Image (cartoon, rainbow, N blue to C red):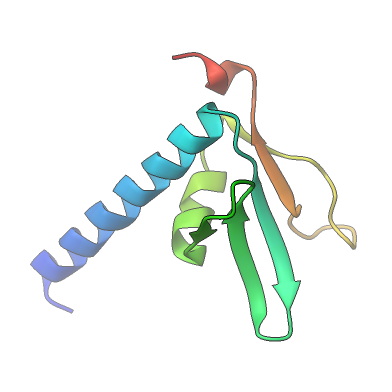
Length: 88
């Protein structure tokens, strides 16, 4: 992949992750669902989120998992913004 193309894609993913975090600051919750076709991320308002964008969002230190994983040592299925992250 050409360096400019990779940089452009990274910028798009980072912008999309920032939009997810903004939605979470507005009260939305990020959910991970499992279906026959695989894992699917969506905000509580119903907007589907690309898995690459969701992974960027949950790596933010202000995003916390609810600890609702089906099995130990796997990712949570529900993510919220911490109170610290809710500050403007």
